[in-house]
Length: 409
Image 1 (tube, rainbow, N blue to C red):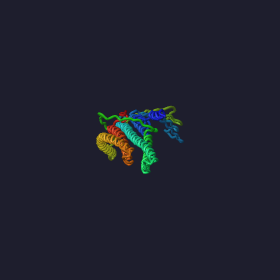
Image 2 (image 1 turned 135 degrees about the horizontal axis):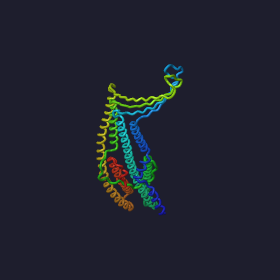
Image 3 (image 1 turned 90 degrees about the vertical axis):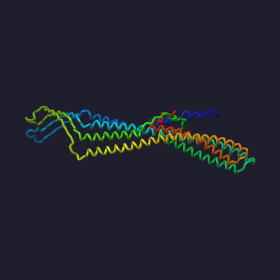
Image 4 (image 1 turned 90 degrees about the horizontal axis):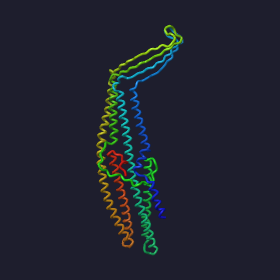
């Protein structure tokens, strides 16, 4: 029997999920992370597209012309083939700025992915320790249940010999039934939290181990990834404005076209055999007037950039406040732990004394049940405070823009 009990304890422990492994699994398997990775890949392709615009273009083509009535100077059948090579000698910086804009958008996408991963880690940590708190509450209720069942059996024996009343039995039975109700409600809460955590992670969760978040020491704040997203987007607007402005600058392009002709039903003007012609074309274009169209587009984009810069200032202030609150939460939770520990020690001591007096008949079962409830609540409260401290540590790492999984042991 002892071996079976030991096996029941060891087997779940062997398959217990650690907080760090859960985070790693989620980052590698979460569907939103995969989606954001694909968005990054798309942004990277946009850069390649913009870079390819620097290379010369080569076009090949052909045509066939048939005239029912051949006229003087025009062959009845004309066959044409051509190849054109063209290159932009100057475009006012449009290509360069388009590449830089796309690079900024790629950075924005990378920071957005990083932000989501860190937010996911915090959410998993909160769920993890909330589950641990509910499990601690469940353990306390189960312990209370064992004590109530034992006491109920003891009172029933006294009742059989006339040393206890039905009222005492009824009170204990009511307390036991209420405790069983709380146990079942807590079990459901644990199950619900585990299933919600399973969705975030991408696999079913059964048992959790006792992972600990390291105590923060000498942690340097970094700008949050959300702020870096805004900065990158603002940078992309800057280059978009420059791209539009390039429309007012000269556009110079060089093209060389080689044509080959052949004729059918021809005359002396179009002798039999292949004919060819090479055409070199240098074009110069500058926009002199567009009623301020490009200028207004540029102004619109720069206004959007200013709006983002305002958001950056707001987000920076919020990050500083959140870090301050996270530190305050750590200190507050530590004080709550000390208080809860003292309360638990007092509750355990009081319960032992009242339980002995109850067995001796010097206090009634109301006092006994109150003491038992106080002890159960104090134990659950203490465990919850310990888990809340772990969440507070995780929150601090999150707001200083760290990967929480790197600070778990």
